[in-house]
Image 1 (cartoon, rainbow, N blue to C red):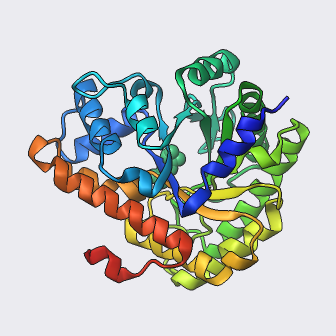
Image 2: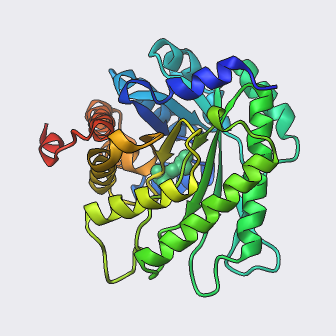
Length: 340
Ligand code: 13P
């Protein structure tokens, strides 16, 4: 039976125009981003970087929750204070990524299935005891010739729904993240079709597994042309088609939608979120918010470069992105904010 706290947490994460900061990169992904900037790929470097993020002064004014990974949720600041305590003291709800990553889907070249259901009930219970109040599971759907297959969409939707039901049983709000990837030459229209098909399947499976829609968060991609598509539509066109697709596929009972950034630049991600809220906010059944990793962190990571002397400047860059995205939730983001 779903707990009342679970419903409250889903609402609190969207309150006051705040959003989520994803800092749940797996170790290999984090190492890859560090390697590009010549930052050592060590546990200590990852810890120091995550300390920079969670100790950013004022972060809680724009961020309601952060998504951690298994390594980070167990870590502490250099002085021994657990990251979990720092977050809770800053009024930020801790969440945890619980999937075990996207693996090759057998007999489906170029397609992935997200693993991690085995032993999930026990892991969720441990994370809840530690203080996590929401969780995340990401499915990835590639777009290409003959891809995605129906079987890939159905297998991933089924896994997302089984995960979400287990989360609600454990008292955690599930973030359900079916990501249609930007990689490729496909058009905006192709992304729209695939995104709608994926979301329809996801909600069929969520209903089938008896997931309470009021106690979950959807984390989808924006509807975008492939990054190698020669035609790149305007911010307003992307906003219009994204909202249209969501209205067709996402039930009104869902309290909020928190977009992933998926490789968009930080500024474009803010501008597109802003345009959706400017044009549609008063007419939508759900909140439109953010749960970005790269589009919040990347400028800060590039400034930090693994050096203690750069921590303050990196924190300022992180805070600026958090503020810009909170403004975008209100439809009040402007390019001028980037210069503050
Ligand atoms: P990006 O915003 O970088 O796409 O990451 C989203 C995500 O799922 C990380 O939790």
